[in-house]
Image (cartoon, helix red, strand yellow):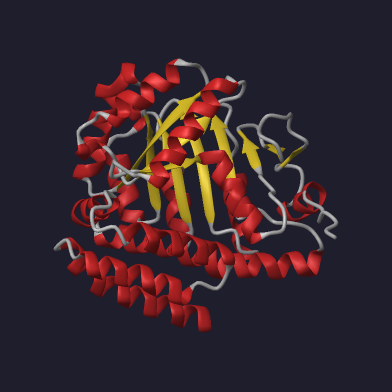
Length: 342
């Protein structure tokens, strides 16, 4: 009951703030961040909103432009639903539920689950069952790597609509984005479409981005890095017109990433965090998922489910179990025993 009241109050405050932010009110945006800090109940939320306050103290920070563009191009209901589902349901109320569950059951629980699906594809009923179980213990955010699927999965809108209080981050190839898919994500309100970008396929990326922007859906981008040519992709991406630079850009480390490339990407991200020059926030997908885990729980506990149901606790290692053969609770107990801390 208390969490429902808090969410209601946050929704009303966000409704009031959005109209002012659309008019490019920097003060109202700072007020919204202060509201987040006020309701922060854990270390992660305090760090996140503290960093946001620090960045927005600079009146020339390019992230103001990113947020103003979001407020003027994305449907209000989408901004509010996705933002609260991740910021409050996953990182606040969900994190509290996860810590309570860990204390009772003696093992760690990941804050999110990554579904890395392909044409082999896990039956939708198994995906639905996993999310249902995860949501009951506080896991309210799910990442879907869908780039290996032939098309936008026809079952996905049913999942989005069935779990309206969860946040879904959907990694897609540009050609998978149709007008129907973009409109379906906008209607659900709880999904962010992340378009893969390469220099060679820049026009496809821009065309898919145009579809999402026209649908007033939520757009992000992803760039895989591994070989040296990945650095050229990032350089080309940074030179795109601002309308194609979304508020979030995920950098995705590939298996076998060259150490020199990894170091170059991390140095670029550190510089961008200290001295931002672009209206996009760079996120290192796998490292930042684990960083949030370490803050919510005492240890990182990455969980990935593959297209055939194989379950991994390390994305570079073979699957250890199968989600089709066991409950989520049983798998979490096997995978993530609490480490002993002095």
